[in-house]
Amino acid sequence: RNALFQAVAAGERDISAMVVYTPTPAPTTPCGACRQVLCEFGYAIRVVCCCDGDDVRESASGDLLPDRFKL
Image 1 (cartoon, rainbow, N blue to C red):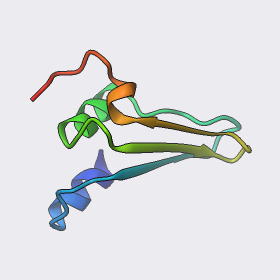
Image 2 (image 1 turned 60 degrees about the vertical axis):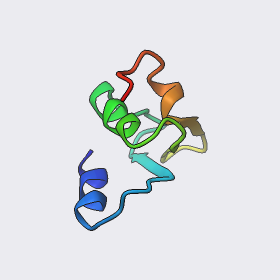
Image 3 (image 1 turned 30 degrees about the vertical axis):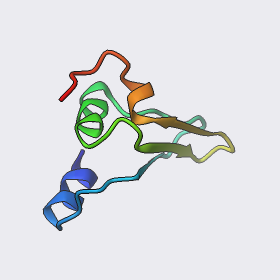
Image 4 (image 1 turned 90 degrees about the vertical axis):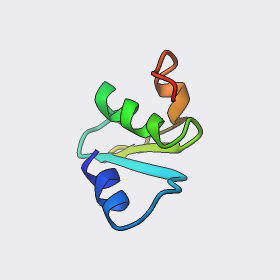
C-alpha cells in the first residue's frame, strides 16, 4: 500500500501493474487490505509476485479479491 500511496501522491492515477517482492523461497501475494486498495484503482491491475526463488506468480487485482467492494 505504501508504494501505491507514494505513486498516487506523486500524481499517478493510472496504475497498470504492481510488483511484490519478498525475500522468501516462494512468492507471497498481497494481504487483504492491500488487495482492496489495489482494486480501488482497478480490477485489471497486473500483480506480479516474485521472490528469492525461481517462482513468479501473476494475477489481476480483481482475481486476488473476487468478492471485493465495488466502486
